[in-house]
Each structure stands twice: as structure tokens, then as C-alpha cells.
Length: 144
Image (cartoon, rainbow, N blue to C red; front, side):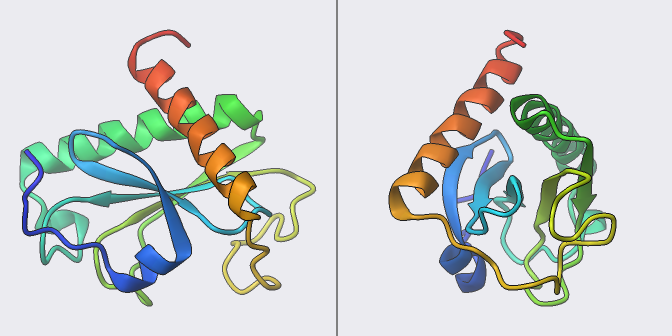
């Protein structure tokens, strides 16, 4: 059960739009239209590392990562999915789920530090979040 004293890190709040809440994680869309890029944040206060979660939450996190990865991969026909939990700039535990393509600006390296982020327009940001929400919900419901 998500805890009520959870607060999203200000950097994540500034750089993302909420897509939906899963049982453990808040799913966010990164504001960089160059990449289909979700961020999963377990709603647990003061957790910096995956091993800081209890066993039940670790299992749930992996299930949510797998479900979001599969939904995003299918939705955008990704060539490869990148999943990473770095936390060097934002210490709050969060997991990046990024769809990659052989022709994307950072291929075949990591997306960090490659060019400048290209923010979505307000309408496109909301539409993309809604599109990914529907894909994740369909995956959860077993409709994909």
C-alpha cells in the first residue's frame, strides 16, 4: 500500500508529467520528446536503492518495470528497451524505462548527456501521457 508521507523529488516533479499510479509506483513521462521515456518511482519515503525496499516491494517493482517496459515497447515498436536506476542526480529511488531505436539521437550509447532535451508541447505532453497510460492499463488488463 502506498504511503501517505511520500513526496516526489522536486527535480522529477519539474521534468515529468504523471501517467498513472500502479500499486507501488508512480509512473511518470519524461519531458523529452526525443525518447519514449517513463520513470517509475516507488511511493516509499526515504528510499534511495532497490535493496532498500522490502522483499514484497522489490518483487512488485520488478513486475511494474516489466509491465511498463512491455507496454511501452509494444506501443512504440521499440528496437530495444533500456532500464536503469542510477540516482546520482536525484537520490530518490526511481527507475528509467526508455524505448530505444537504432536511429535515435543517442544510439547506441546511453541517452544521458547527449544533446539538449526537447520538451513536448503542452498538448503533446498530455496526449503522450494518456497514450502510454492506455497502453499500460491494457497490458495490466491482459488485453495486449
